[in-house]
Image (cartoon, rainbow, N blue to C red):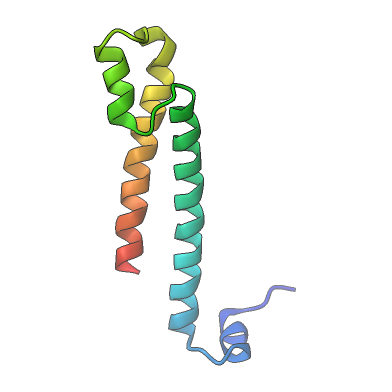
Length: 92
């Protein structure tokens, strides 16, 4: 049987709005952790810390484009997601 927001808020003596805000914050923090962990794992494959360092490997000819293209695109996407989630966290 599902428990509703009102019941949970009363149980913890907080408002429904506060419960929703805390829930959203917890969800966003979880997503931030997942995106950042995946981004770091992809970077670690090339012994770099971020997208800029990945790009430098390609520019300097240390890694062929075919070797890193998918990872580079994924890190680029994840970097954008991390920034977006951070912005959302500031708003919650």
